[in-house]
Length: 122
Image 1 (tube, rainbow, N blue to C red):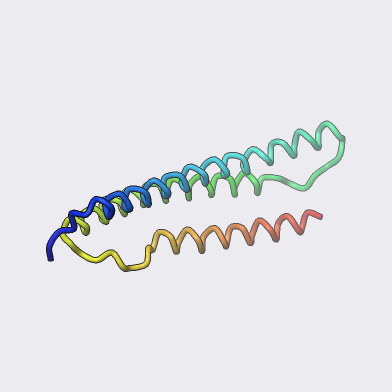
Image 2: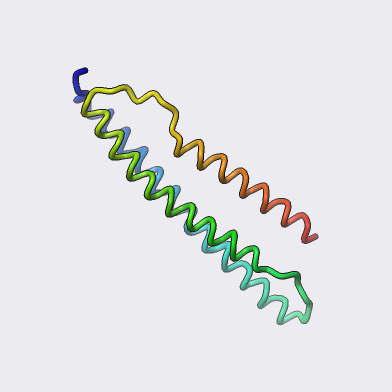
């Protein structure tokens, strides 16, 4: 196959890569906020004199989100390089992204767990 020299294809690959970088950064930032939320709840309980259930779970979820953000950032670099190589060789880029599907399903599972946990606190 002949390599694709259309700059729009390369720019599309670049935009996709940058979107994945933003997603990884957002996951890491959100994970940090979730992890620190447990600390906030402990401080709030200490000042009000109430006893709250253990909040260590927010720390674990926060760390998990940060780790997922790091993993997807690394995976996005690998996918970016792979897509550039395929584009240079003229291969088609029509396969679904395992990265996108994994992120979507993983976040759905984590979100569901968080919802169940928040409902159980009421």
